[in-house]
Amino acid sequence: MRVLGLTGGIGMGKSTVARLLRGAGFPVFDADAAVHAMQAPGGRALPAIARLVPGSVRNGVLDRAALRRAVIGDPALMAGLERIIHPLVWQERTRFLEQARRAGHRWAVLDVPLLFETGGDRACDRVVVVSAPVDVQIHRVRRRRHMAAEQIKAVIARQMPDREKRRRADDVILTGLSRGDTTRQVRRLIARLRGANEGGTNEGKGGEA
Ligand SMILES: CC(C)(COP(=O)(O)OP(=O)(O)OC[C@H]1O[C@@H](n2cnc3c(N)ncnc32)[C@H](O)[C@@H]1O)[C@@H](O)C(=O)NCCC(=O)NCCS
Ligand SMILES: Nc1ncnc2c1ncn2[C@@H]1O[C@H](COP(=O)(O)OP(=O)(O)OP(=O)(O)O)[C@@H](O)[C@H]1O
Image 1 (cartoon, rainbow, N blue to C red):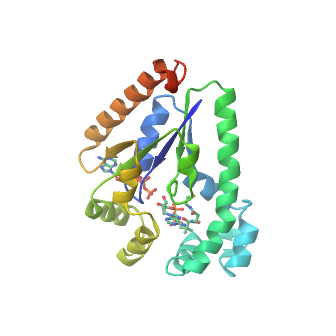
Image 2: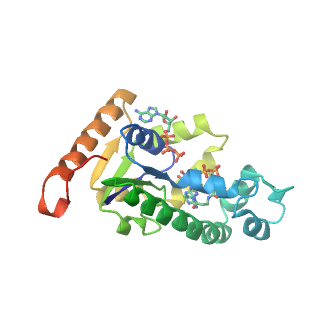
Image 3: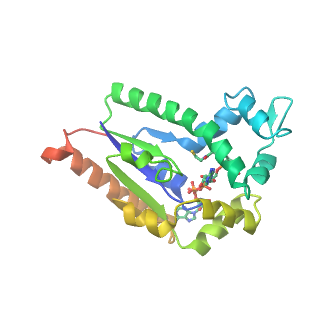
C-alpha cells in the first residue's frame, strides 16, 4: 500500500478534495477531525489542555474559541498545544494506516494541514498540495469561521508558505476557480494514481483505491 499526503493552508479547499477522494473509494485520515474528537467532551487531550490553558475547559467542555484566542499570537503556548496534540494524532494516523493496509487498499490518504511542518511528508509516497490565491483563501476562511482577519493572518503566518508547499508537491490542485474545475483536477489525479497502480516497477502492483 502507498500513502498519499494531502495538505494545504487553511481554507485552501483540502476538505473538499478529501471528500472527492473518499467518494472515489480511497480511505482518508482527517487530522483536523481527529484533533476535534480528542478535544470533544471526554476526549484524550482535554486533561492536558486544561493544565496548559487554565479556564479553557469548563465542566468537561473545551471552549475552542477561547483556546484559539489564547494560542494564536502566543507561539510558546501554541507550541505547548502542539506538543500535546501531535503525538496523539500520530498514533491515530498509524492505526488508520494499519487498518487500510489490512483492508487491502492500494492507496491511503493522509489529510493533514501541517503535513510538511511536522515532517509527515516523509511517510508519504506522494504529496498533493491544494492551493488558491491568498485573497481567495482569506475570503473563504472569513466566510466560514468567526475569525478576525488578524487571526487568520496569524494562522497563515504559522504555516509553511503556500509557494514552498507547491514547490515540494508532486501534484498541485488549484481551487481558485469553480468547483467543477476542482472536481476535474481531482479526477485527473485519481486517474494518475490508478495508472501508477497498474504499471511501473517502482510503482507497485495493480488494483483499486
Ligand atoms: C488552535 C485550535 C484550538 C483552533 O481551533 P479551530 O476550531 O479554530 O480550528 P481547526 O482545529 O478546525 O483548524 C482549522 C485549520 O487551522 C489551521 N491550524 C490548526 N492548528 C494549527 C497550528 N498549530 N499551526 C498552524 N495552523 C493550524 C489548519 O489549517 C487547520 O486546518 C485548533 O486548531 C488546535 O487545537 N490546533 C492545534 C493542533 C494542530 O496542530 N492541529 C493541526 C492539525 S494536526
Ligand atoms: N473551486 C473550489 N474548490 C474547492 N473549494 C471551494 C471552491 N470554491 C469554493 N470553495 C469553498 O472553499 C471553502 C474552503 O474549502 P475547505 O473546507 O475544503 O478548505 P480546507 O482547506 O479544508 O479548510 P480548513 O483548513 O479551514 O479546514 C469551502 O467552503 C468550499 O466550499
